Length: 113
Length: 111
Image 1: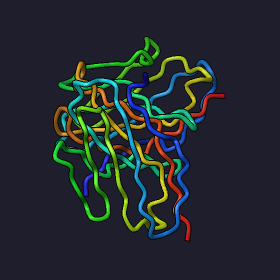
Image 2: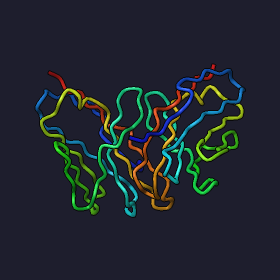
Image 3: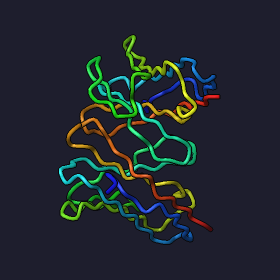
Image 4: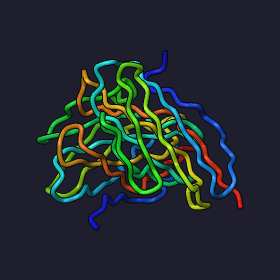
């Protein structure tokens, strides 16, 4: 069964450093998403991406965040200058169509020291 | 009012019990509804979509009441493996890509 994959599984970084989280969505999916989940809290929407551009972003997704689809398979989330409060699990998801079921990757645990 | 609200639990039930979870949502124009389950430190996994007519998948039954803006999940004959956090998920109509998650209801099934 096809699945969303994410790398790395765990990223530790120093405050102020840039990080890039990587995702490979399911191959025939057209919509891509990033979510985050701070430990013990709910899953929060960050951004959605379709047709090589951001289609929607939340108030969390500020200028420190960016997304990119550099080739036909990868979908990345970059955080330019990490803050302590960016420590969370970051989930990538993809779906075939609008409002369709979203399938989640296993997540990247980001720890900012 | 929160966009998606769930009773956080925890629900502690014996094996074989029937347990029901409720969820309310604030946007009356929302159109897509889902139940996901999340195991500790794992990704959310789709349990089932929720349709207006209600739907059943084995031991799981989901219901939608649009008038009351209320979604439910019923688990019959609960198993130890059902222990997880159950997430109610609703799409935002003003942005079709934007799914909003409830905080989840924690279920523990005990022998």
